[in-house]
Length: 116
Length: 114
Image (cartoon, rainbow over all chains, first blue to last red):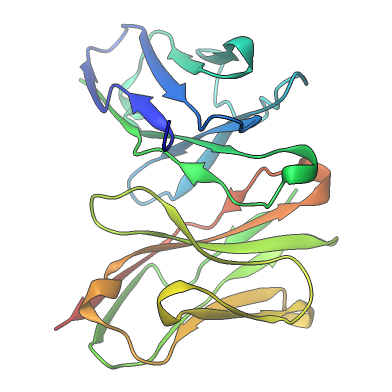
């Protein structure tokens, strides 16, 4: 596609429910990132996928958070047993990797999650 | 681990005023430096970046940033702001040991009064 696509754009859920957020990166980009943007807290790194390498999960805040990337393209971020503090905008970004790396990340418009 | 500090959380300026947003990072090795901008209701987009070479980098819309290695700084500047520059600005750093993974500062909200 023309840009990074994320869905849903808005999600309201009840505390304790599971949610899945989807990211469709730019075609040809081998690197994919998830960030979380909370009010007043900037952007927090969550997880990074590069090609077929094991993902860098060092930013996931708890074991309730997981992400996978199927076929080196679409990624799903799953939050289990959501808590109110999970409310944030979840941003996905993609970029070229390897020798095509320009250092620039292309961001989607984000999925706004509200946990009641 | 690398970290990024943006000292100004909120900045209010009148049109035509000059702008300088501070950014300091901590990492002892070679870094790549970025400024991203998020206009109201839009996604994050790259404003400018520094990898190597001339430490004064020019970006889009008249913005520039200067890398001062001795100060671990990468401040963003614009000589004369416009109302359309109202946005949130994020400084970010990556290093070759962490691939493309960017560490962002907390952001600076700029409001330009017409």
